[in-house]
Structure formats: C-alpha cells, structure tokens
Length: 257
Ligand SMILES: Nc1ncnc2c1ncn2[C@@H]1O[C@H](COP(=O)(O)OP(=O)(O)OP(=O)(O)O)[C@@H](O)[C@H]1O
Image 1 (cartoon, protein in one colour):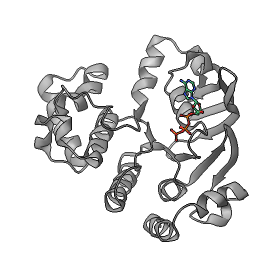
Image 2 (tube, protein in one colour; image 1 turned 90 degrees about the vertical axis):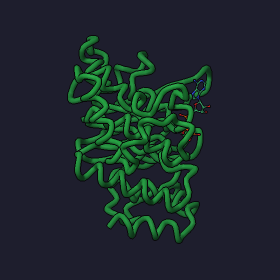
Image 3 (tube, rainbow, N blue to C red; image 1 turned 90 degrees about the horizontal axis):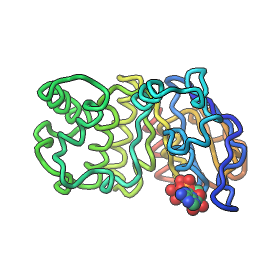
Image 4 (spheres, rainbow, N blue to C red; image 1 turned 30 degrees about the vertical axis):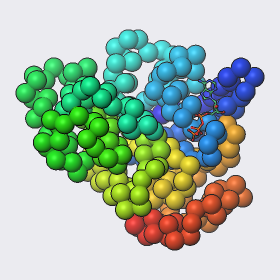
C-alpha cells in the first residue's frame, strides 16, 4: 500500500534518514522502532506530506506522491490520519471535544451538523469514552483520555492507515494495556492498518507483526516477527529488548497471542 524507497533527509549537515526503504502492506500494521532521535517522527511527517521535497521517495497504492494533484492529496489525507505524540497540545483548548472530533467530517464529508454529532457520539463510545464527553473541553480529561480523543478524531472518517506516534508513552501500565487492546480491536473490526511509532519494542511486538528498527536514520532490521524474538536478528534489536523490563515484555507478548 505504501512504498518508501531510498528516502534520505538532512537538517543542515545532520543526516537524519539515510537511504531508508520499506513497505507497508494493507492490513499489516507496521511498527517503526528506535531510540529518541533515530528519525521515526521524521518518517511520519514525510508520510503525511509535510515535506514536499521528499514526495518522490514515497508511493501510495502504486503511485508516487510526486504525481499527485490537489484532489489526490485530499483523498490521500483522508486515507492516512495521524495521532500525534503530544496528546494535550494536539487538542484546541477552546473547542468542545465534539467539534474537535468532528473536524475531519467537516473537511472530508458533506454530513449535516446533526449527522456529524451523531457520528461523534458513536466514535466516542468506540474509543471507550462516554457519548456525553463531547460537550466538555479537552482540559477536563486525563492524558490517556486525551489520547483517546486524538484517536477518535483520527478514525472518524474511516481512514485506511493511522499513524500512532508514541501513543502509549507516559501512560500507567493499566491504561497502556487498555489502549493496546483498543488498537487491536480497531485493527480487527475496522481493518485499519496502523503505523506504530515507538521506542518500546514490547509495544511494537504486541501490536504489529512487521517491525522496522531504525538506528541513527538507518534501517537495521525489517522483520515479520510472529511473536518470536528469535526472528529479530540484529544485536541492536536484542539490545532494545534487553532495555524492556522482562515482566512487562512477557505480559505484553502474552496479551498479543
Ligand atoms: N525540523 C527540524 N529541524 C532540525 N532538526 C530536526 C527537525 N526535526 C527533527 N530534527 C532532528 O532529526 C533527528 C530525528 O528526529 P525525529 O523527531 O525524527 O526522531 P525520533 O526518533 O522521532 O525521536 P523521538 O522519539 O525523540 O521523537 C533528531 O536529531 C532531531 O533533532
């Protein structure tokens, strides 16, 4: 569905992505894993079309983004939705939650106001919030709930792909596991392909079968893991596993099988 070929990017003299290539297939969620500064969010920003100079290296459903006209871009932006890392600052504090979540419906559909709000209520319940929560403002919610609001906004227009940038970071273990369960449900019931950006390989392995490991802007591993850590070949991948507390790792993998 998405093909990235020989993608490189520099900021000044700093090479942050070096000849990155990989593919994301329909219904095969993919994790991009790496330490802070390895270039994960830069890939997300490029996929979202924020850096027009990199469009030649990306193709979507067989067509280079470079060839897209304005209508193609509109369709692509509807198909690929982000959930940004900073849940709180991604929500306009002056807007009610129902208007935040309904925004993509205003941009991409011709639904009436009432139809939009009805859909918002459905989506709020789908992400395990209350349908009345739409009447509140973002500050009334915890970080985990703000992440769910961001997720609701991302999925309301039935996207094919959702990019989750560190969705589970900064959450308590229980809330984190609840969010992981929710993402799994969305994969199964709504056929959403997720691109999971995370520094935590246990989260990656519990949510996706396809793992890309980035180190200093280079893809060091591109693997289908089948819940078996022996599928990960590089010593760097095993260093990342070592960095995860054992219990947490076992718990997450158990939940994924
Ligand atoms: N707009 C920018 N201008 C200059 N340098 C940037 C810019 N955006 C990112 N960088 C640099 O590019 C490198 C990769 O950043 P990126 O945010 O993609 O990494 P990351 O793996 O997502 O890190 P984190 O997990 O901390 O978010 C870092 O060294 C960062 O400082």
